[in-house]
Length: 390
Image (cartoon, rainbow, N blue to C red; front, side, top):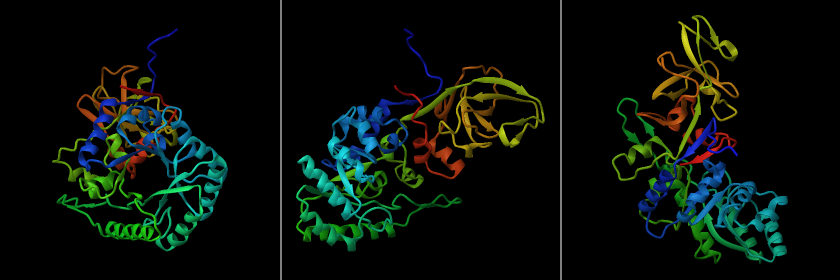
């Protein structure tokens, strides 16, 4: 039996940083606030059940998006979980049998959930999503009276909570010249007021002592803080040591809040060689060497989560220095310039995301190069890559 097998390419996860992050948020919020840790999207690309097994003692609930994610969760944890994605009719039996708190997308779905719960001889717990000027899932304020009437008719439904989502509470505009931070919370206040009206309406229909929540990581940082406005908060991106926006990171720059990225993405050099001046690199002939150039082949590509938009602009770390991507990112490999590294050799460590020596490559930095957000950078890392907890 071969022992101590080291994968060629893998995602390294820091247990210490993960625990640090959730403790940081618990110290920020009011004592008694209950936490829902969001693990959808393979825990934002980190590896769902690896995160679950570490976080279980530190959270009150988990949140997933699908029956598939719920099924994976139940392999390692029986902790209460919110399933806030859409569940088709054929999957309702599985969802209720596995055990979860469901959201409701329509009165028709509510009726179906009640029927399945009756068959299972249970009362299925639900939270109602209010579309408080998000313009996405949830019930509009005008639709709530009819929904509340229908809930009252459903004997196998336990209506225990009502929630909403902020649309842009983390957003800001940064002046490139002065770097002054300005933010417009007009829409957020509009959402808060609409959500409050929904809560008042629920109470008028006799639904009292409901669990309420509107804040994700950005809401915790910009709205809830230590106030304890709502009994539940949904901690997503912050769990993993990433900030929802540059504005919020700058806002807390001089505070005690210290978030630490959990994820590093590593591989090894597959080949090193020297190309002559005028040699093209990769598909599409998008790069031509301007001089004799030493290159390294990196065995990761867009199948693994390296965005093709990083072609000719991304970087990796090798021997503590940044090495620029040359040519197009392919499905399973890409090329970097290592002309400045005379001692580089095959199987040297390559850091695609994370730190090496004093240098680091961040999800935010990668996102800025391709016009997206840090959420997408980590979430799109292939679930097939091995996860290694350290």
